[in-house]
Image 1 (cartoon, rainbow, N blue to C red):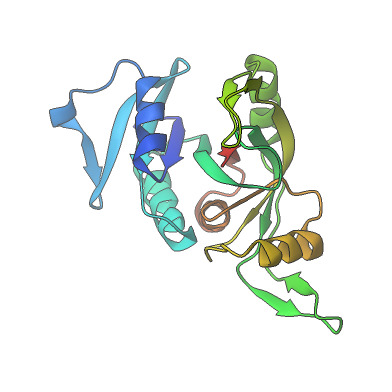
Image 2: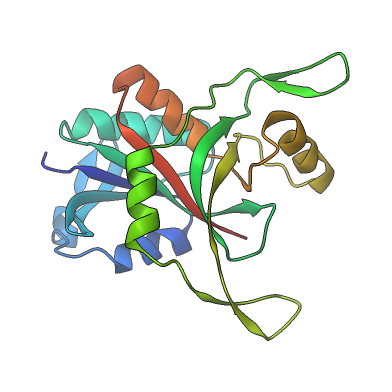
Length: 212
């Protein structure tokens, strides 16, 4: 019940990377299981935290976030961490400044896509803390070269839709029509936004993902 921070991941790489940085983990045999969901309890950055791995998509993230907010009454912040599609350089870190929702939309008279989802700003408190706390410099290797370079951190909007969009042309149109300065595209953030709006408005939320 003392958990104040929830870390949300999707794939194994994201989960185990986050788990590596957690300390004071509860004995694995004593994992908290609420509503069929496993929460790994420990400390992250000296904050009592819960780490969870869930399925892809906004409906799954909305359900998990909802269970967490009901399970941990002292929960103050949620961070969705991992990787996402990027409009920038591979490996660069995106700390989102806004979650640009893109699940419900209509086509305008000029065939432009018009989102009907909320596009709230991400937590300024978390954004400022993360930007000032870490230097976010990592050595990366591009697929086309063996030369290493330092990844950069960007404080930019991230598009969020439960639909997996593999077509680059559609991605580009989504970005142009909905949020031209968005740097990433992922599938879970808008679900968390909706859960927070229904259950605990005002809770801090941010997405931190590396472009892939």
